[in-house]
Length: 487
Length: 105
Image 1: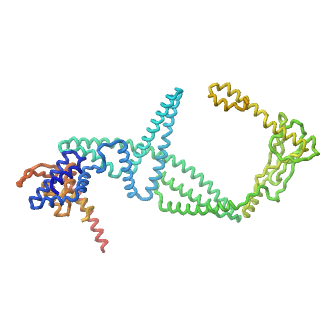
Image 2 (image 1 turned 90 degrees about the horizontal axis):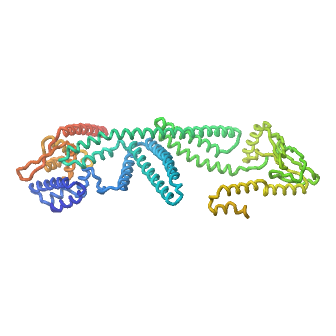
Image 3 (image 1 turned 120 degrees about the horizontal axis):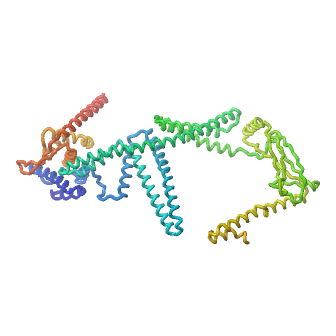
């Protein structure tokens, strides 16, 4: 390789730099080559000692703090891509530098930051609504278009703001100690540093140094506010978890009681117990984070891992246990059923409200016999049959507990031992006895009341009002609303 | 020699050599390559950076052989920087070699 060739190649590779800088470098290197040749070396050999030109150019550009891949003109996209890649780079660096505890803490904080940012959306929604109120009354497509544009602008601003905010907080929080910032500083300074402008450059550097503390002060404040806000939200979570722990502790107590009584639902017991442990683990994790204590990360991770494995196994076992448990939709046989009977006089216009089982008893031509069947061991009922107005009969009842709890508990435990459960929440069984003719009349009255009763009339009234009030409704709307009425 | 080792040490060597006496580019390259084996191109970026950071000043002087040479002269702040680097180096070297000796036993 000749000198000219070397010079041209190097110039091409360094074309990003100022012309004067390139001249300086070339001059220097040609000087080296000349010196060597004076001492008896051949031209080619002297140039060979510089090694690979690409490598040399990269080294030089690095000294000027210029990234080789960087294009000359920047647009927003490039800046964004650069930023993201920078963040990724330093992210890797951060992960290299930090231990597990800090990484976990970082992940929690990132989630919290995202939550915060999504909360910031609320004022933007408000702005959108204002836009709706302003533009929509224009009542034509122009207003709609304006509203769409307004919405777009706001959504976009929010998006950019969110990204910038995130990056700012993130940078401030995690990359403050890395060199990246210093590099940017010196990059700015060294770019404009030419021998003649050295003094100016010095001033610039000073300015940058003066400006920075102020800026970081504001960002610091913002970050601390954000962190306090995050901690506030996290403490709310903490309260939720505390409630869960309390509930689970009660469940564990119950399972211990059942276990002592010989009920064998092992899967459910273990699931409840492991859930309690998971709750406690999460509680300590969040608690330590909020109050700046150190988490024992190894212990927590192992705890979580083991808990989840056991939880998976015990859940599947529990589901099998639940599936094999029989549900019997009546009370156990040893509960005594008692019958309470009420007699009502029958009128041809009577309407029986509610759906009941009818039984034919031809002897009752002028009366209706109502029978309430209930377990007297569990509760006592008082019947309350009333016919308030328009011949409607309501078959109501109230019940009073008969200190049934202990007894039922024993029965439930007995049931669970056999993997079955009876329906202990049985309500009284109501049967209506009367002659077949009366049943027919009652059924007919019931049906006609349902179909042509006052509800129907009210519906028509409602439609009529709606029609008068809403002259503005579009035609097809009216048709849809009132079609069955006008038919 | 390991290039990673070299990179850290080159700046120190350049500073020490220039603080001894004003030097021009190629002379410096020769001096350095007596100590460690370096590529000729790698010294200039270091000189450039040190000049930009005001540790060196430059002036031109004609030589007996003919071409005009750019000489590097160390400034006050350059001397300070050199001293602090030297201190760091000795601390570093000391602790590393102590560790290695202990490990050998």
